[in-house]
Image (cartoon, rainbow, N blue to C red; front, side):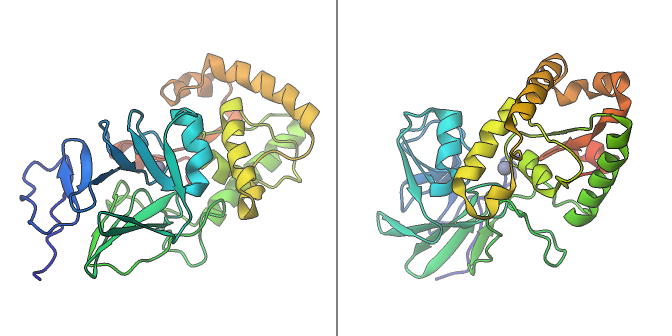
Amino acid sequence: MGAPSCNTGRVSEPAAPPPAADDLIVLRPEGLYCPAGDFHIDPWRPVARAVITHAHADHAHPGHATYLASALSERVLRARLGDDITLQGLAYGETLTCNGVRVSLHPAGHVLGSAQVRIEQHGRVWVVSGDYFVSGVEHDVNATCAAFEPLRCECFITESTFGLPIYRWRAQAAVQRDINAWWHANAPAGRASLLMGYSFGKSQRLLAGLDVSIGPIAAHGAVENMNAAYRAAGGAQQRVGTPARRRRERRVRQRLDAAARRAPSPGRRPRLRAERPRRLAGFAARDRGHRRAARDRHPRL
Ligand SMILES: [Zn+2]
C-alpha cells in the first residue's frame, strides 16, 4: 500500500492533484465523498447518504435523502432542517459499517454534538475533522460540549478557517474575565450589557462564561431555542442557558427581541454601536473575513 495521497484538497484550490485510486475520501461536486462506503460528508448538494459533522448551516444542508450525525446533534439538526428528515443518530465512538467501511463519530469540541468522522477500511484510517476547537492553551476547552478527541490516522482532512498565523487567540478565561468586568462596571450604572454571537455555539459559550451573580441574563429567542437543546443534552451543557428567574427574563427577552429586530445583523453593527455605544461588547464570531478579524479589537471566543 502506498503512502496516502490526501488529495481531497480544498474547493478553493483549483490546482489540487487528482485523487489516488485508493483514497478513502475524494472531492466531488456534491462535496467530500467516500467511494468505498458510498456516502458524503457535509455535502452542499443533495445526496443519498450524508454524514453530518455538526448542525451549523455551512455543514448541514437540507435536501439529503438520509442523514447520519451524532445523537447529540439530532435535536438541533431537526430544528434547523425539519422534523421530518430521515436522521440516524450515532453515539460518540459507536461504529457503523457501510459497504465494509467502518464509520464512527468522535468529539470535535466545537458545538453541541460536533463530530470528527473516522473512516476505516482494511486497517487504513482517515479522519474528516469538520469544525473543531483546540485552544493550544492547557485546560482551555469548550465547556459547553465534549472536548476534541485526538485520533490516530494516516490522513487527516482538516478545516482550517483560522489556520493563518494572523490569528492569535487569548485563553477563553481571559476573555471571559474581560466580559464579566465590563458587565460588572455597567450594572451599577443601570446600563444593560448586550453581547452578540451566533445563536448556536458561540452564544452558549458566552453564556457559560458569564458571572451570573452580577445580574439577570436574558437571551434572544433564537439563542434560547438552542439553549434548550444544550440543556436537554445534560451534563456540562446544563451550564448554558438562563437562570431560574423566568418571568423577569421573559419580559427582558421580549424587549431584546424587539431591539434585535431593529438591528440584529452584524452588518448593521455600526448603527447599533452608534445608538447605544455602552451596551455593545463585541460580536463573538465563528467565521469572519481574515483582514477584518486581524484588526478586530473586540473580545472574541
Ligand atoms: Zn461550525
